[in-house]
Each structure stands twice: as structure tokens, then as C-alpha cells.
Image (cartoon, rainbow, N blue to C red; front, side):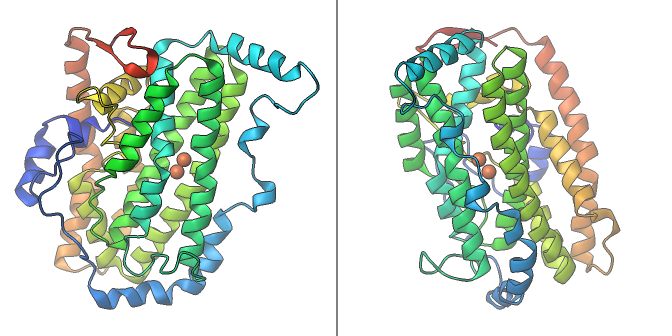
Amino acid sequence: MQSLQLSIHSPGPLRARRAAHHPPRAVMSPTRRAVRPVTHSMPPEKVEVFKSLEGWAERAVLPHLKPVENCWQPSDFVPDPSGPSGSFEDEVRALRARAAGLPDEYWVVLVGDMVTEEALPTYQTMINTLDGVRDETGSASNPWAIWTRAWTAEENRHGDLLGRYLYLSGRVDMRMVERTIQYLIGSGMEPGTENNPYLGFVYTSFQERATAVSHGNTARLAKGHGDPILARICGSIAADEKRHEAAYQAIVGKLLEVDPDGAILAIENMMRKGITMPAHLMQDGRGPGLFDKFSAVAQKLGVYTGRDYVDIVEYLVGRWGLENIEGLSGAGQRAQDFVCGLPSRLRRMQERADDKAQRAEPQSMRISWIFDRELTI
Ligand SMILES: [Fe+2]
Ligand SMILES: [Fe+2]
């Protein structure tokens, strides 16, 4: 889910144009922070919108969760340490034999995905920064809070499962991986959502789809490299992400229905900023650039690319029927024009970036997660 070359990494025309509207946000390095982020940008009276949608959320959002008893658990996919004598060791040996066929680049991407998932405390915190939908008590009974807790509980299985698989594979430097997770949770994230649930749910609508794409691609590659169980692991995680994206996109769809101007302006706002990746502040304590390296490898393997970013924008424009929304204010119409024209503009930028990348010299890098073995990208 990882590289956002179009919106974050490349100083393209969109970036220049965006800068005219928003000061550039400090998303490049773990050590830099946006100076004065916007906070609480939703007008206070709009809290009522979310209050009035509670009945709807119960009927239309909560059903996207799966009952716990029907959910897979990490134990379903990894060797069972309580099995008959010797079976655990045999299963671990088989896992490691399958894992032997996966190249270093693949491990980098799988670790990056796992680290991203493991920073879940940050994402639950982020959702609980949102005015009008936050879980005020930690066990609040309104459907927004119920969703957030149960969503977190489903997500919690993702990093757990990937982490167990990575540990048993013996292919990665677990200590450096764990250190990266600790740094990342300590750093947080800068999604630019301004305590504003309109912005927050646009962000999660995009982001859950991005993770579904990314895990879907690591599943496909695992299968190609002869590890069907890892393919099932990544595919099962991707299926959860798909349920989650459906829920978040339903929320934004409903906002477009009850407050079309507010919702289209929120979509425009997030699209102008660009969707930052949740783990963009990652580091391993050995100098800058870890996230960029991870992004470059994900791009090279086709796990998450600039093209995927454009595809997601295009998908959301269609999913929400943005071209057909009527009765917007002048500002709303301008936002609509901007957002609906964005996929083709991003597509052109992406083609230019791809051309440039094809002409670029291969670069070598080392990443601590794979014991600093050299990679050429
Ligand atoms: Fe996840
Ligand atoms: Fe997710």
C-alpha cells in the first residue's frame, strides 16, 4: 500500500499546483513535522449530522463487521505448537522450505506491510481524533464507537499473523523489524484529517482500498513463488480490508447524500493534499529514507504503485458517482470539477513518471530488515 509517488514523492505539476492552495506538509522525513496543522475544521454544528446518522450506521456500517466466531484467527495459518509430538517442528520445516523460494525484495515488502499493520494503535488514535464519531469513553455504545473498536479488533489480527509468519520463516531480522514498529508507533502519523470526520472517512476509504490492493498483490506473488499458504494469509487479510473499505466508502456515500457540498469539499481537500501512507514516518534508527526504500521496492514488485494510486482515485470517483451529483454550490461545483478531472491528470503524470523511471539507472540499497543484504532496484 505503500508508495505514493504521485502525491508525495515526486515534485510533479500537481504538487506545485497544490502548493498554491496548501502549504507543503512535512511528510517526507520522520524527523520533520507540519508546523501548524489545521485542527477541528468541521463546523461544530455538523456533529449533528453524525448523531442523526446513528440509526443508519447501525443498519449500513456495522454489518460490514464479521462476528468474531466466524473470523479467521492467526493460529489458523501457522504451525500449531500444541499438536502431536514432532508435528510443530515438521510444519515449521515445511514453512521454511516454502519461504526459501521468496526473493529478498518480497521480504522487504512483506515486512513493510506487517510494520504498517502493527502501527494499529496509531490508526485507532487517528479515528478517535475525529469530532462527532470518537469513542468518548473507550466503551461508548453508539455505532461509530462500536465500529471503531471492532474494526481495530479485526485489524489487530493482520500484523499478528504476518509477524508470526515472518518470525517462523527465519528470513528477516526480527529485531530490526520490531525496532521499526516501536519507532513507528512512537512517531504516529500525519494524515491531514484535521479532527474532521468528513476528511477522516475519505482518508480511510482510500487507505483501506490501498491495503486491499497491496495485500492482494503480495498474495498473488507468494503463489507465483510457490508458497500457497502465505498466499492464503495475504489473501485473507486482503478480504478483511475489502470489507473495511466498503464500510468507509458507504459512510462517505451517505455524507454525499445528506450533505453533498460538505462531502465533495472534503474529498477535494484530501485529494489536493494527497493521501499519505499510514506508515510514512517509519524508521529503523539507522538514518533516513526507510519508507522511501520500502516504497521503491513495493513499486518495483508491482505490489503498490503510482498506477494503483490513480486507479483508486478513479474508482472512488465512480463509486461515489461524483460526476452526477447535482445541486452543489459554486464551491461544490468547483470541487466536483477538480476531483472528477483528477484521474486523467494523475494518469498523465504517472505515465511521465513511468517513462522517467524506465530511463533511470538501477539503484542499489541495503535494508536492515533483511540483514542489510544488497538490493538493486
Ligand atoms: Fe489491515
Ligand atoms: Fe485496514
